[in-house]
Amino acid sequence: MHADPWEPPAVLLAADLVILTLRGARLHVLLVHRGIDPYQGALALPGGFLRDEHEDIEAAARRELSEEAGLADVHLETLGVYGEPGRDPRGRVVSVAHLAIAPRLPEPTAGTDAADACWMPVEDALSSGVELAFDHARIIADGVERARTKLEYTALATAFCGETFTISELQQVYEAVWGIRLDPRNFYRKVQGSRGFIVAAGPMRRTANGRPARLFRAGPVQALNPPMVRSAHVTPQDGPAAQTAAEGVRQS
Amino acid sequence: MHADPWEPPAVLLAADLVILTLRGARLHVLLVHRGIDPYQGALALPGGFLRDEHEDIEAAARRELSEEAGLADVHLETLGVYGEPGRDPRGRVVSVAHLAIAPRLPEPTAGTDAADACWMPVEDALSSGVELAFDHARIIADGVERARTKLEYTALATAFCGETFTISELQQVYEAVWGIRLDPRNFYRKVQGSRGFIVAAGPMRRTANGRPARLFRAGPVQALNPPMVRSAHVTPQDGPAAQTAAEGVRQS
DNA sequence: TTAATAGTGTCTATGAGACAATATTGG
DNA sequence: CCAATATTGTCTCATAGACACTATTAA
Image (cartoon, rainbow over all chains, first blue to last red; front, side):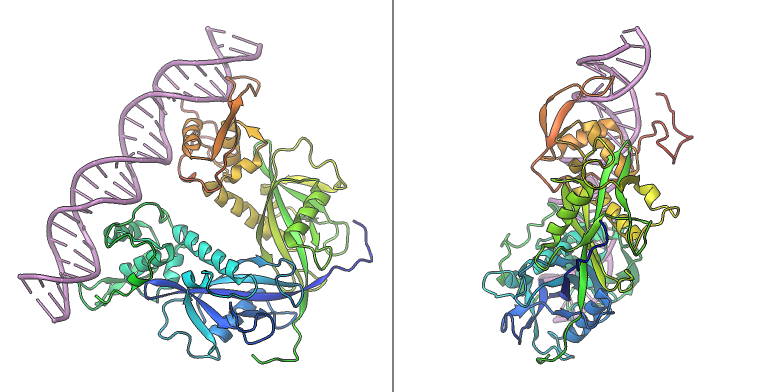
């Protein structure tokens, strides 16, 4: 309460990234193989310390996004703070975790110096068979949960898509992130009825067979009204199959 | 990417608190008068630096909650990270903001050494007439927005109430935080129908006049199902404070 | 009795989910 | 033609919101 001679302790600040994307019909997260000291050889989230005293935290996250994943212009938001004492054996390191959403990409990581990076299904990354550095398993889980929740009441789903997309592509996003099946016909009307969610972008043919679909792009609205409730609307379709890994490959 | 001689920069970590409560029919935030150096004389959120190298961030928040507000056992959650370079003239200070929800209290702050603390309506605190230190205006706004959103789909509203409460007390929470009027009859059924939200705690008389109300306590469920949608359901009634004012009284 | 608040019943418009039907492509 | 996907239409059920009505207290 008065002026006192006491000095507050300093900490190291890191920006870590949960980068999510769709590959096939499954949600994937980008992981890197650690080559150095703590947890060497384990998988970890891309990230790193602030470059210098004056770097903004989000700027550091974007820099790591570019350096370690070769990504730019993707959705990025703060996920949370992870600063438990002892989470890093090197000392007091506080990580500001970020959630990034990337559209489907041509090749696993490619491009920059991120040769040691790889996409892994979140389901696998969170299974006990994978060793993740630090508290990164919890951070990934929190990131996935954030994405699931925000899909309901924001237009986040469009961040998983390219500049233009079909409604069924958008539906695949919801199905992959939520891990359930939706009725294409009700989904179609629901999305169309959510004002400002998506706007038309000209018709075009797309997939191998079937009637060509209209193209859309992300609309101006962030808050979905009404929201995309994730309750029952499951479609029976092919067996309940409960999250089995085998069923993804659907080569028409 | 190799081992390098570079040293990452260190930062100071602070835990700040947005403490919300209801006083009368309005949402209030706890503010303290700064007595020292930067922004001396301005109003600020309670908070402070980590005590030492090994203090957990949330522990620091709870300590400040006790020291500066005399509060314990209240709802507390992480709100966000505010670390923009230059936000604090003393150097690189990163604040981890927390949101705390307190039930109605007998006296403004009372108790501990928090004599310089006071409750202020959030509406006033965010008006241009009040000088707030650092970026605390934004942090308060973010805290209020978080509370508004979480009232919809979580049982957070019960954190504003005491151990037991009536349904109309709970309604006052929603009305104050959302800044709208609700129909008591529909609210009653809605709350009762949200499984696990509230549980009975014996009948009892309460306010001055009118039929005595049943008492309830917070139920076991955190995620509200169905949620408490904040859309139209406004009741004409008497004009609340501002807004409609003129159009109201529509007797039968 | 009246005033005031607590609690119940009921109607209606809206929207979600089920699912038939139609449209448009490739083969 | 058939297979596959896109898009539209329609039906039913649940629920949000409006609001009449009953219940229970103090004065």
